[in-house]
Image 1 (cartoon, helix red, strand yellow):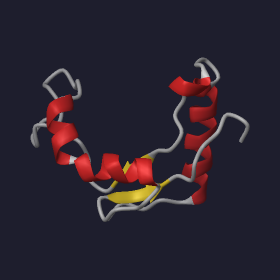
Image 2 (cartoon, rainbow, N blue to C red):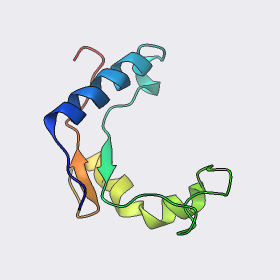
Image 3 (tube, rainbow, N blue to C red):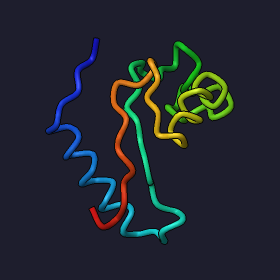
Length: 88
């Protein structure tokens, strides 16, 4: 089982804040999650050129996507961020 810790959280939050600064508020990342599973070519989540197969991922992780909007953790998530704002 993969592990998650505060150092990784701070690293991701810093990077998301950097990226969010380039976008207007409606376009910014508000909440994010780390999945327990890895997306792979073998499971059909990625193409051979490592592009995301959105329809497959959207179907497979529909419950996770919905839970993100509700702010609820699912068993497929290793970590769920609190509501993230550009101000910190």
